[in-house]
Length: 169
Length: 65
Figure 1 (cartoon, rainbow over the protein chains, first blue to last red):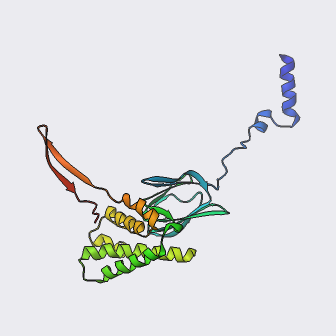
Figure 2: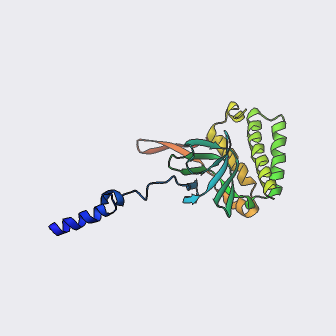
Figure 3: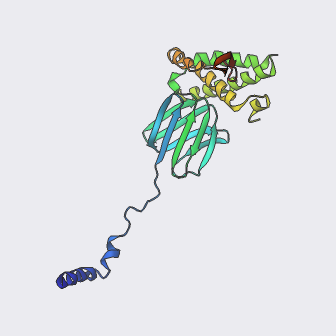
């Protein structure tokens, strides 16, 4: 017993420091992570579930924003527009969402809820054009106030779609 | 300005519905057919009294033409 205690003490002081303090420096102290954890859900489909991504760019009612890890927590109402998900420096996915909410949590996770989201390739530029013309016609006509309000919402959606598609082409 | 639809008496749910429908209408044919099935939704209710079903009424909250 005595011998054992002496060996331990010898080992302890060989480095000039008590053994305990040498061993327990936290090597896994949480360094601020640069990973954003993304959940992206629609009522009928889950597009991302706990996927680590680098950055997400979205357009909200308070402006266009890019979200990285350690973003300030906030809740944003999405405008009909493009959500750009930079998964890693080589892969970027683009979706057009009809609207919804993005919630930035304090632990670097981001939840996006939208009603409809489609990849830009799924849209037909011709039907956007005809629908936009129709919506603008109604908005400028002598229809009822409510019909005009609906038409101008639709016109905004189609305009944003057109912008998104011409930019990517 | 930001919420012109709100002054026209449209609620957020209705606004979201209108936007979603516009997005569905802009899709290519094959995706559009699938997506537009999601647009059809409705709610009806009937009051039951003394074990008998009353008149069935449709709730036209989310208008879909």
